[in-house]
Length: 211
Image 1 (cartoon, rainbow, N blue to C red):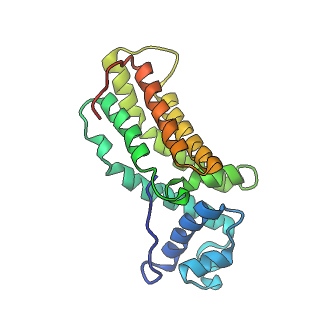
Image 2: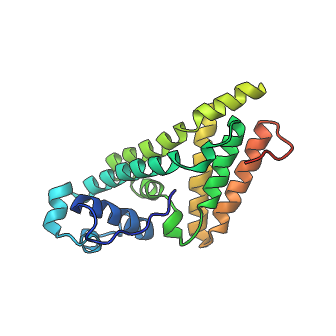
């Protein structure tokens, strides 16, 4: 995911500032440990303004997941991995791009919706579902290239483009968990190296494909 920079309090509406605060604070502390008062302080808004905008902390969680989906969709749509003409090269370029943006502090590159989904999947179905729409929606952007690569290379098997697209997100999200558990971003990069090898194996690629 992108590594957003924090905005100064005077920029953007109260709603946007609160969403940006949630994006940054929740990735650092987790959803449960993030207090409304802390979000208000970070966004430089009053508690009254918070509840005027969202009504509850859970409503903020849903909105934050949707805000994350919107902003990261734009980020990935403009990313350079779309440039190669060959669909398999685009898939491998996507994996390389995901590895390249694993940089800086853990909270700067890990996934907001992945973090929240792990915490609230049972306690807040509304937040869980918003996180699921974000993660699965992003996976869906890979399906056309995977299907095209299968077709062009005559790849058959008991797997689908949709399932491989979802698997990429399983590896990415799992890599974030390992990076947090080991306090080492290299663990996430290592996972993506293995994902690249797996994709090459599925498509019977033995030589390096330009990405």
